[in-house]
Amino acid sequence: GVLVCGNVVVRGELIGSAGISGATAFHFTAYRADITDLGLVGSGANKLSVGDMAFSKGDDGAGIAVIVDDGSGAAIQLRDGMDRAYAPNPSPGDTTIAQTFNFLPADIERTATLSMFFSSVEGVISGSGPQRPSAIEVTIDGVVEVLDNMLGSHDGDEWDTFIHSVNIPAGVTSLTVQALSVDNENVGRLVASLNWITAGLSVPPGEDEQGFGEGCTPGYWKQSQHFDSWPAPYTPETQFTSGTQFSDVFEDAFPGMTLLEVLGQGGGGLKALGRHTVAALFNGKSDVSYDLSWMKVIEAFNNVYPGSKKEYEALKNEFAGLNEQGCPLN
Image 1 (cartoon, rainbow, N blue to C red):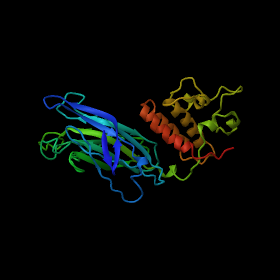
Image 2: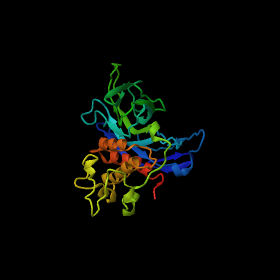
Image 3: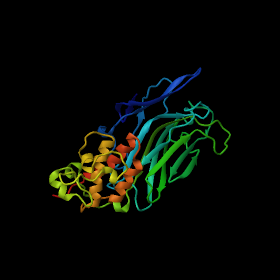
Image 4: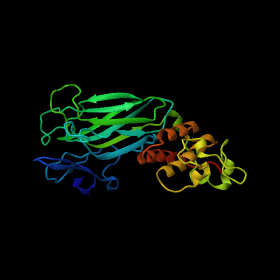
């Protein structure tokens, strides 16, 4: 996928495709390009023109997701691809895959921002007249918010950028969103066929997660000269003790392993999350001015395990950011 953005030629990476069969068979494709280093976006107001997308059937549009570091400490997660849904299609093409975002809990209510890109809901190529029915379902703490008919070429022909504020109650650790090809309000028109391309969630930290700014890394806590900094009641594995088992504190993600062994293991995915989880536990339990309590660290890990690689990576990144703020211990 090649386009021109701000007079700069940009080549995108294919992130998904979906086909339409029959006499008018063709494929939808979605591309992603990181334009951060092009210097096209700066402080203040920005305006970018995107064009020259040469596809055989047509161009549904493009969107730009901008992440701003305003110092708030918000946790940001992004998902992208090509998830196409049209209700008359046989399963699984009749609907999209629900996306669940996991985040750390807080003692206060927060307002998160859900941002999404959609295409092919309504327009010249889609046809079938105006306002083809659709719905977006947002589920938080078991409560489903149904947003009917929010899409319909609101940001250019065949393109929708949908931004929605979501209330996150205290203690809640996840949000699930799903786009549907459905006519909940009985509009009576042909339901929308839609391409769900991007979903992003920004969750601000709780009040007790701000303003501390200290944290020691897994590398600090696993060194024998720092064993005397381990907070009670946790003990390392030494010649005098077998050490605290990971399963004594958290869900049993590492059977038979001690906290020290989890700290010292290499690898990514769940192993990386394990290292930073133990470090976060110690930071929250010790004299370190950490941004999370040890109870929230335990709750966050147990909420995400067992889970997916994406969920492990998201929580690991949150813990790593806090663990790497600077260690005040000797």
